[in-house]
Length: 326
Image (cartoon, rainbow, N blue to C red; front, side, top):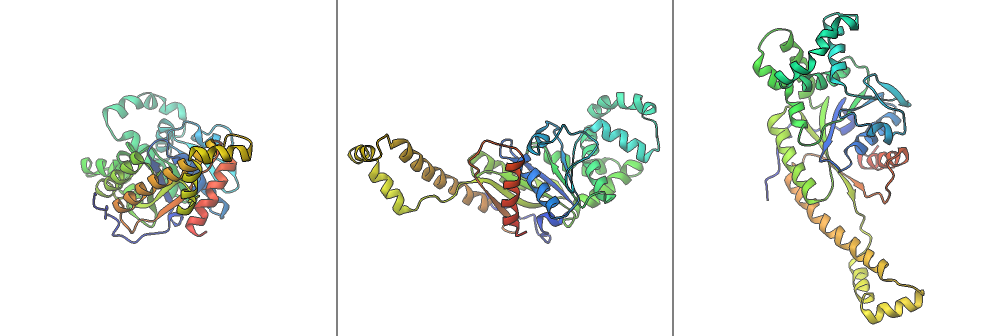
């Protein structure tokens, strides 16, 4: 059993009391759903909230049932703005704000060279992405910025990019820029990471590994682990014994005659629910043992629906509110 990651010696701040929150997790665990629900919950409690989709796949727009998102933030619900990250647009904004180049056409050649520069100097794309979020926090345009961040394999590189640049550049404009980014990222009262997972083997493994990497390779505090799709305790031990008895062929046949149909699919589903619940409980125990006890762990119920629209996001937001006590 791996030892819990104990990088959270600093005081733990409430998840939504921060101003910049990166939401990450293994692909398929519901990362975007949770990010959208956190943002919606904060907005419904009166906080001016920006939700940003880094991968720009359009999932946020679909989940919130709004039109396509872009780099320009747009209000889609009261107090909730959404945007999609575009690193070239971020570069243009940076040049306009910091080098005072007002006409887009004049920076066209620079933009055309962007892909070359980003390829030749690793970390440029990450700096432009993280820098945009830090800028929104520094300028206090919003009370909270929620980032639907990259999956577990890429988030550490993004969060540690300012550190990596600082180790290479000791003076000058770039150093001063990364310095204030690091100040924001390193302040646990301002910035945190939330890892979304599910009570399954691979997501739990990746969550424990990522928690260790966030503590060892970045200055950002792990703010919470959010366990999605937790099955409810539907049946007790005594009921399991009843199911076992009902599955005996002679009893099952009699049951079929009483209900005038085949009852075996219902009994199979009940036994499957019990098996899944027990298996996932073991994964939850391993997750809890592998994460610093100081890190809050939130649990979201399994939603027996395939829908991903605004109604589902509101349902998840309510569950998060109950877990957060707000």
